[in-house]
Structures are given as structure tokens and as C-alpha cells.
Image (cartoon, rainbow, N blue to C red; front, top):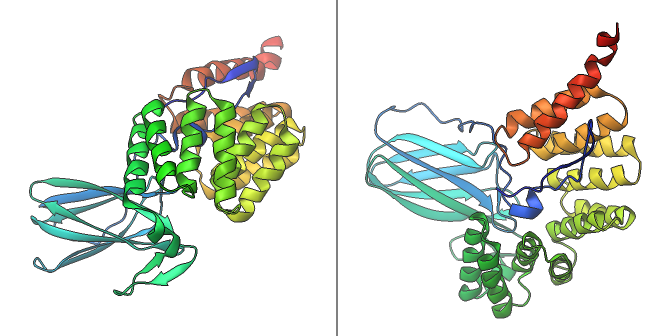
Length: 346
């Protein structure tokens, strides 16, 4: 997973935070997967597992209800996804299973999986519901979603796949085609911006993010977070704060949005507000490693090196082998020397 190398301006301060959200769209906590709780049933048989993602931003969807049904085998199971959006159901006989994922604010998603051997894995995507329409079978679907042509959906899906494979150039071509087929496809515009940023084309990325904001009528928070992040990189934290806060008004549950806001507030020398924003991020997702990095930066500015060390340790627990982990370990050693200074002088 691509992550910008952290710049250590001082031996005890890590700057230049780059949220992985805006580079790769997939937030990997790095900690072992905490398996979803399942009902007691026979521990033998096949295993059906998978991951649920929010299609708009490709984030894992945690704590959403996954229902599994098999009419022929007479099996019914309900589980919740874990913090990484994963679920696992064991002890299943070979059969075809219907999988339904339901979450308030999203259209129910249905798929099927054939379990013929010992295991099968699926990926399920959720789409947010805005304007609602009831279909013939009683399911709630998005009117806008119905307008998106199948070709645009397919190009978007391919773009996401290549982005996950760390191939932004190929993903960019698919997102571009998706937008050409359906110009109002703001999710594709946003991901087009992500691909452009990963390719180092910041001006193009800004245009794509802004186009996503315009196409969504300001209701797609992730595009606003993208603009805010780029404004931070341009040394315009005041402008960044305004657009990030507008995004949080739309999606207050976003831990990543609060991390980016905290980074802007640090640049504005408003450490107390930045700390509250980082804490808001951790309340929403305690496994978001970058939240600990930005919190460590705040602790360093306040001279609280013990807290900074705790943040480094938390980050390394979540990202023990991440691309930024070596830099964090180096900064951690420098912090230990600072903490040991007074004792060594005595």
C-alpha cells in the first residue's frame, strides 16, 4: 500500500502526514482481523467469508448486518462485519447461498455464492441512498443509481480494482471512461482525482475533486476532504479548514475527515482544536493508524513526549510493517532519547 514517506523535520516531530485514504482508498489497520461474532453451529463443513465495502469510496463497512440464507439446506445465519468490514461463517454444507447486506442509509445489496468446496469468498458493495424509490420486490433503491448506465458501472468497478492493485494509470483510464459515459458520476470523478494524485498530477486531481463536489451538489464529503487535503499541501490551511468542515457536515461519521481537519488545524497553530479533532477521529475509528500519527504531532508540539511515544506505539501496533513504519521507529528512538535525557544527566 502506497504511503508518502513521513518527513521528520525534528527528531521528535513527524510532519507531512498523508492520509492513506486519499492515496489508496483502502484503509488497512494492519492489525489481525477480529472475526465477526457468529451463532453457535457445527464447527465442521465449509466456510463462507467476504468483505463489505462502501462503493462510493471503497472503504470497508464495519458493523453492518450480513444475512445468509439457503432454502434447500434450510440454513439461516446473521453476522456483523468486523472493524475491517470482513465477515466469516463456518460449518456450512455445499450449496448456493443468498447473501443480503443491510445498513441504514444504504440500499440493500444482494448477491449469491456457490460453496462447492471448503471455502468461498465474496465482495459486497453498498450504495448510499439519497432520493428513494421502492422497487417491485420491496427493496429500497436510489433513483440516481438507476440512471447510471451499466457500462459506466463496469468501468468504475474496473477502475477500483486497478486502484487496489496500486496501478493508478490503468485505473485512471477506466474512471475517465466511466465519466464519459455518465458525466454526473461523482464517485468516479472523485476516484479519478485519487488516481491523478497518486500519479503526482495535483492540479488535475483538484479539478476532478471539484467536479465531484459540483456534480453531487456538495453532498459527496470525500471529494471535499480531497480538496481540503490538497489545500493543506499547498500551504492554505485556512481554506482547507472551511472545505473540510463542509464535508464533515455531510458525513460527520468520517474518521478520515477529522484526521485531515486536525492536520489543517496544526498548520494554523491551533493545537488544542487539532487535538480534539484527532480524538474525534479515534472515537469513530480507534484502528485508524494515521490518527495516531497526527495526534503524536500535536503531543510533540505540546512537549508531551510520553503521549507522543504512546501514539507511536499505537501506530506501530496497527502498521507493524507499513511503508511508513521505519520512519516512525526512527522517530520513536529519538523520542526515547529525549525522555531519557534528564535521567542520563542525573
